[in-house]
Length: 316
Ligand code: HEM
Ligand SMILES: *[C@@H]1O[C@H](CO)[C@@H](O)[C@H](O)[C@H]1NC(C)=O
Ligand SMILES: *[C@@H]1O[C@H](CO)[C@@H](O)[C@H](O)[C@H]1NC(C)=O
Ligand SMILES: *[C@@H]1O[C@H](CO)[C@@H](O)[C@H](O)[C@H]1NC(C)=O
Image 1 (cartoon, protein in one colour):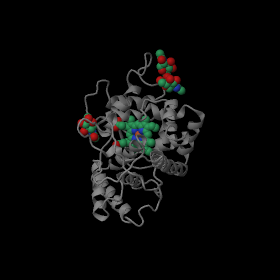
Image 2 (spheres, rainbow, N blue to C red):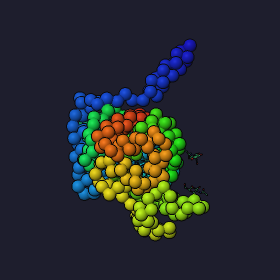
Image 3 (cartoon, rainbow, N blue to C red):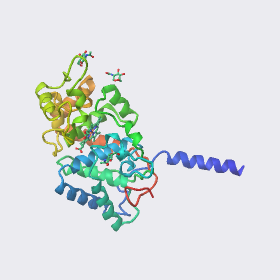
Image 4 (tube, rainbow, N blue to C red):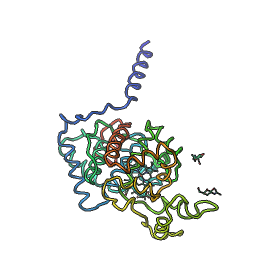
């Protein structure tokens, strides 16, 4: 009897905790009121030395949330035989981990063991957008850090070669809609891509076409110029848009001109619904930022962790 009661008790606890952590805007108001300004300072400092820091932080947060929820798993380092996410295949775009480390160090000095690495990353991604000229918003907090990070799970990230149905599947598995997909793809207003991520569109597209015919010819020619078929330059690539350090709606304007880098960007034009949203965001910066904020809050509320790490690179 006692065993059954104990089992029931465990089952109830398990089902409650599997609902995830309840997030709230004022989560650290009593326990660490200075946390947010410490993070903003670390992001500002990082940006002063390196203009690519905001793009890195935004991409890092997306990557974190899409694997095991936003639980800081992207920040963990490999241990022994376990290769972590950050050492998995699509990791060329991941950098600027030191900004999160600096924020964590500052926060640990203020309020030890209280603020999760997952929350620090979510807040740093928001600051990255705001400090690049984009909108600001209240980030719900209270995420916990996860203890598992596997390189093999980076396969769960959507690939730049995905078509619209593959993108839809990837997003809907995480409770995200087609509107979330179009709005969050606007993150591609910031940053840089390596040749390998759009190689499929500019060389040997298929057996009859060398270049993706849905890519603007002069744009394709300029990309082929920086990314020849047998590219030897390690960090060759292209900026996401010419204003790649400014958070604006240029991405959608270029997309309508068929000047986007990835098949997954171009794919947003392939259904009337998603194409309509692209047109709406291209013609209204306000409509874009409103939708982006709503979708960021949704994506960053996918929680999954259990603890608060002391060092963002290692489990407790
Ligand atoms: C829709 C599915 C998505 C796909 C297939 C995708 C794919 C990619 C790829 C292939 C790169 C370039 C990696 C490289 O070659 O260096 C990249 C960069 C980037 N992505 Fe996405 N992405 C997606 C969604 C998102 C979302 C939701 C966000 C954030 C809201 C985001 C933000 C970024 C940023 C900021 C960069 C630039 C990173 C840097 O410059 O360091 N992406 N993405
Ligand atoms: C990406 O993975 C490789 C191979 O595991 C590793 O050597 C490299 O340091 C990783 N890059 C980042 C930015 O973590
Ligand atoms: C997308 O790609 C998948 C896998 O290659 C394929 O089965 C599917 O038919 C494609 N969908 C569209 C709309 O092209
Ligand atoms: C190559 O791609 C073009 C454009 O998407 C398409 O019209 C054509 O049918 C494709 N050819 C083959 C052999 O798949």
